[in-house]
Length: 106
Image (cartoon, rainbow, N blue to C red; front, side):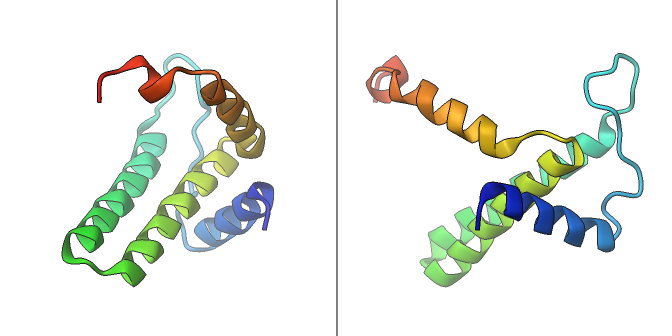
């Protein structure tokens, strides 16, 4: 599955389940971005659930929660018409040129 396919499937499912009754315009001054913030917090919640699965040693649930993170991020990007596949490719290329640990101490 490509990132573009993941975005399409995640967004279709989220829309069908009521997560996109209102889609804000990203980056427009004065526009309400609370929906974007709530979508991002859904991804954060999934990360917290993955952390808890790691804490208790539940690898199967850890994988499921990590999948949820990707699904939530893909859906959010699809809703905002962000080309996540292109963004990931650009970021990987940028990170390849960064120093060890991005120049930070371990």
